[in-house]
Length: 168
Length: 128
Image (cartoon, rainbow over all chains, first blue to last red; front, top):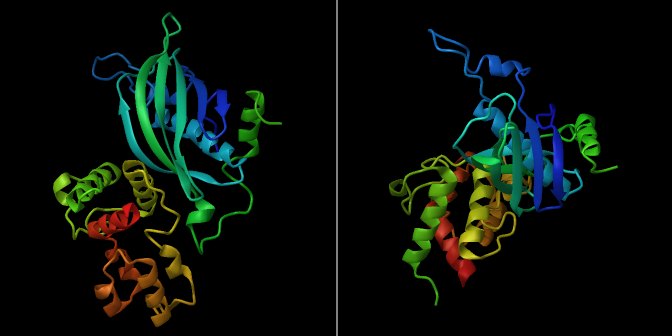
């Protein structure tokens, strides 16, 4: 994980489930391009769906990595499904809940939901359902050498874990 | 009661449609997972996980698709599978028809042995 796209991990149950949140802010430049005002239509800033998938991937990736104490290099390998029913706007909070469906030495399949909450009121509402697979790349790339150090679960990532109250 | 061959095929078809995003009609017995249905390496793991769930079976790594045989220098020389390698593949993959592959033995052609029928036969052997 070379960049962090979630703000805090709320729950982390080994090999079972991980919950994380991300706040959507107008300070994020991407929202100014997605979508800008055009032909008389005002700007409609929403979090791009691929970045919402990235937030889920980080949440699910942490869950898969944690199952083996972050020894494996866990790489997103396949998005089986991503169905969106709503959008996230500046000020909203996203909540990612990932579950492990199956884990073995080669990798893992995960599924879960993304929900969105408007701070002006109300509870979290469904935003997307996602299925994705992760590969333990050292186990799937015979003959190809990867760096020894775990570039997926970097120091920045470990800081996030500690700041969220998990890990040493 | 044991599942019939047709029932196994229908369930395997469902798995492949979900895992590979192909149409029902594309999944015929002789369809090749890679060449015809567009499977990539991670899809094989996905298919294994889905088969385990659909049929309530356990599949060990490399049991259905023993690709590690081809990474063993003992079994491959100059990009071709040796006699010893061929014997190992036949031992490990009784569910696949290796006759066509045996003619060229080119490692690059190996993915052609992964047909829908091979998956069906593999599942049947696991169900007993």
